Length: 344
Image (cartoon, rainbow, N blue to C red):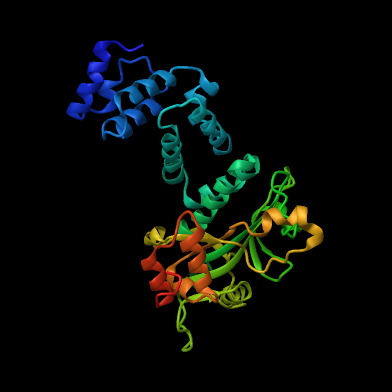
């Protein structure tokens, strides 16, 4: 497909660190975004071999899985399964290209609030294999890029749990209140705790994100003398804190509890740890229904200082260190606990 002169141009482009638009413009490449990515992000830094580059450029011109144009213009819920299909066709660096598109959308095409809205729309269209991706991405957006704002305070969400019931994910631990069919609404659930909903009435999907922990990151009022740390641990404790920071009952403001972009971008470097949800009760009569969901790691926690205040913090650290793919390293365990545990 490629002439010796074109191949020589590619090699010269790498040797001289030439931009993609100078080197690729004469090649028959109808969809340049993937080609530019291969050249700029993989070929120039030496991540791709020449055969991999040529194979990627060749496949990008073919009508595989509908072609590359529809691929990177597809909504996220459609693009994820297409990525798996292209992987099966051995499309070079397609997983990395998918991540590149995700980063581009996450940071350049959407505000954090817009990205959260988009994710909570797309999750209801996703295949079962991709649901965990959406839960992880929603959690990261809430905990790393957004804060909860009241009239007098701003809070980072340090701990949350997902409850999602749909045709493809019939989690029996979801309350399935009618409020959970709505997207991005506050909901006081049956356990008198505060959820952020992410449901969809058209697909009959119920979604609730239970808030379990907050870190106060700013306050316009004087802190009480007994406030030794800025954390609010537990669903009811944090709900009381939010209500207390609403301000005067005589205020004319109507938006006293809302989500906005974080004022502290540095929080985005926080590690995230996952474990199973708290307080779920196993019922033998629901074995077939409940067992697949009882121990799923749908609880997301950030901030070392917050973890250090949690009850059973050692069991959380042990689980992260020994069992989770993204492990808590030894140094972090010792910082969180303040000592070296016997199992380390």
